[in-house]
Amino acid sequence: MKLSRMAASVAVVSILTACGGGGGSSDSKDSSSIDVDNVQKLLTTNADIAYAAYSDAVTTAEALQTALATFRADPTEANFVAAKQAWLVAREPYGQTEVYRFRLSPIDSTNYTDEDGPEGDINAWPLGEALIDYVQTNTTDFATAQIGVTDNSVEVGTEVDGAYVITADDYDASENIIGRTDIEITADLLANTATADDEHDVIAGYHAIEFLLWGQDLNDDGSTTDGTDREYAVKSNEAYNYAAGGDRPLSDLATGYATEADYDSSDLSMRRHKYLEVAVAKLIDDLTSVRDGWADGASYRTAFTTISTESEAREKLTEILTGMGTLSRGELAGERMQIAFSSNSQEDEHSCFSDNTHRDIWLNAEGVSNSYYGVYAGYDSDLDGVDDAADNAVSGYGFDDYLSDAGMTDLKSAIETALSATAEQYEAIDELARAGTPFDVQIMDATTTEPAYLAIKALNAQATQIENLAEDLGLDGDVTIDDATACDTSTPDAECEE
Figure 1 (tube, rainbow, N blue to C red):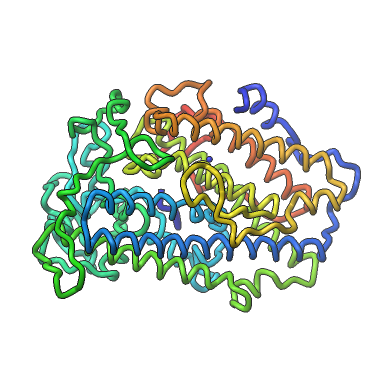
Figure 2 (figure 1 turned 90 degrees about the horizontal axis):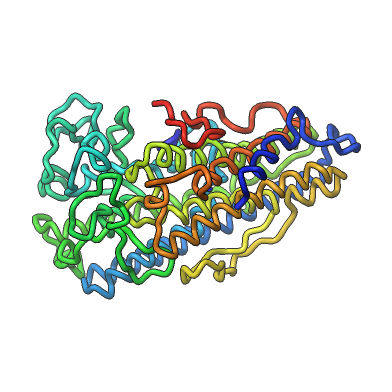
């Protein structure tokens, strides 16, 4: 969800939950003293990885922009597929950057004090797809309360402080930004959402582009799914890492334009291309601003990597671990997995249009591992499951090195066991998806022995080990933000509170 908005057996996960409880390590060496020099190396590596991953996110977004421009000028089926492929590749480096959230870094803050960063325009969800283009509804997965902005007491098509809104009670499939040809599609429009209480008002970023490329994930006959028949929504696609997803017809985008002089704002097909053009340009601008905050000499990076005392070192370590712990338990295990898992909700999976949620899970979890080990292998440029684009790869000093140097071997072993247990489960989720069972089908009849359930448990146990690390390092504060989720991730099949 939009916050200020990843195969071990059950026995192994239970052991991990118990490991290190109440302080964690039994290492005899005193860990209360912080080695400032080693923390300095760790901070530098952390910043290097952030800059590398965000740089790759910008590069792949620019490649997506090029693919969309090619498709717009020549709207063929081959170019349509290529645009989808480019979107999937663009997700690969970005997914690994989510660990840099929850710490007032450039993704969440422009001044490193207020939560006013561009994340909400980059990767926020659930998407307000009914605000963007036509959708089909039913009483289950695609109820109006799911796809519409429901908590604004306004008429359909009304502007509220410049934001375009729609209500569930008056839902009309033609009353949206694409259908309302009098609405000019601009970056300012996409940035100005209604901020509805139900949060289904997102109209910018990766997921807006995803929706316009894939459309809803419907059954093969074009009807909505009802939570019991999603296996019939599985389609054959040419991308290597997904087996299902929406099936927006090429006819929706069949009329393109090569230049602005060719653009006709009354043509719905052209309007969809215009929306994609504006959305990807805004995405690149937003990602570039985040990347630049991590560049050498940038004010944020300089402040983050400059320490001279143990107190300053502890503060910066706390920031890193808060990103790792909160992403593990609250955001990934809770918001991105358990809400969908416990309620069998296709709409609440992270990439519900492309059925790329299995990669979101893998990549977010991999980002936590990157921060722990001080490495970034690059990203998967051909979607075969292997990181092959390694021009910006980083191999530096991580928490594993720090713990080894500090003699904290028991805690190091416990954390790495937890990370491995999580990896086993997200790899199993990915394998199932590649074989034709995407995440929304995996959760349809999910049980406590399946990877989705076990991954949530493993992420919860992983977060506990991150908490133990913070405690053993003598850090102040909670590194797993309490209000990051309304889910009890120790019980994955429990419904999350509203």
